[in-house]
Length: 273
Ligand SMILES: [Zn+2]
Ligand SMILES: [Zn+2]
Image 1 (cartoon, rainbow, N blue to C red):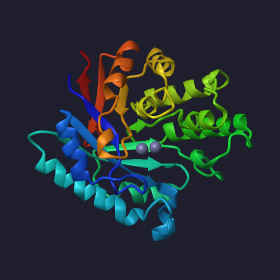
Image 2 (image 1 turned 30 degrees about the vertical axis):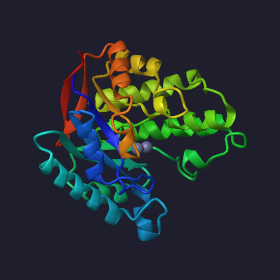
Image 3 (image 1 turned 90 degrees about the vertical axis):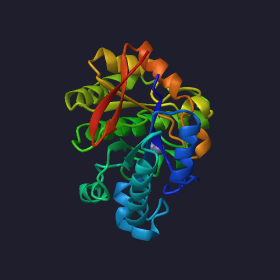
């Protein structure tokens, strides 16, 4: 079966280590069919220029795009390399988002929400000090707003805050009170032909679950979900492709007979066997 990892970060992301070249080499060694390079672009922070602690996106993203494009050519006989971007908080500043999308002629655009308006990245919040319910309600509202945006392909790691809630409280937070909102997110994705990502980083890091979990993937399918993308969210060459097969298994158990990669912003279906 073809293994495709569509969420990876090169050293053009502020928090990742290896070059695009090393990421691709690792993908070839592991026998992957495709890899998407999807470096971080926290859209609203573009206007901070070189002072943003998340990177100088005017420089890093065009570089990422160019390096991925070079690798696409170099590896054309052994590995499908897709030029992507992880577009953070696209709804916070649409002008910045437009600018981000013009950094390159991307194959694939991941949308994600790492922080809600007026808050830091979920990573930095102290969940013993804040009102978790209030924050999660705002988070799912912002995810719905993002799901309704037209210019992306997959919605990433929709249970991202749960990872850090668990880190601080040891609890796997129950999403039942938010399921109505989450269903609206799925319905928006389905209506607009967008994909839901199974982010498997939580399976090899300490979280212990994919983001989202099997129940949520099933729910997406039940509501009519068509497209699933699967990503390791690797931040180093060693993690390329890690647990992607488990992600495929999860999609299969939810009733999907294929998963999806995007090339030139169009879905390509990968059979699940
Ligand atoms: Zn992310
Ligand atoms: Zn990522």
